[in-house]
Figure 1 (tube, rainbow, N blue to C red):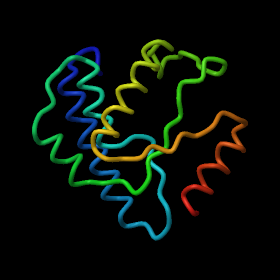
Figure 2: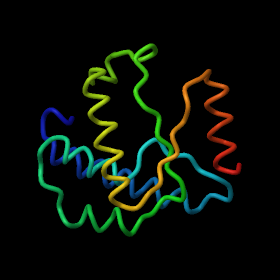
Figure 3: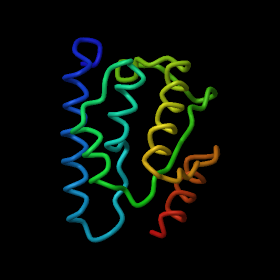
Figure 4: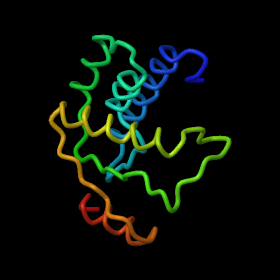
Amino acid sequence: MPWVDPRAFAEQMLAWDMRNFSNAQREAGPVFLDRGIPDTIGYLELSGLPVPAHMEKAACMFRYEKVFLLRPWPEIFTQDSERRQTLAEAERTCVAMERVYGRLGYILIEVPRGSLEERAAFVIGQAGA
């Protein structure tokens, strides 16, 4: 858990994201991932922890074709047993992710607010799926 050992959590995030990237490469069509390798860097930076060189290297080696950004949406944001983050933390996380992905040369595609169906149609349309 991130609140127990943030560095170990980051290493597990990296391993999980590298595995997901590798698995996605075997698929014939578009694959959508909830998080990416740069998120681990953003997590560490947000936590005030140093980013190991191997994580920077992984973020440069494993590149995503497109990156979608969904900003925290106060009207639908909720906390539960899985999401312990507050809205303020989610907003800071979003800023950190924008910074990291931008630094790595990604152009973020912001998903506009709307119904679930509208957001899904936007993402699918942008992905060319």
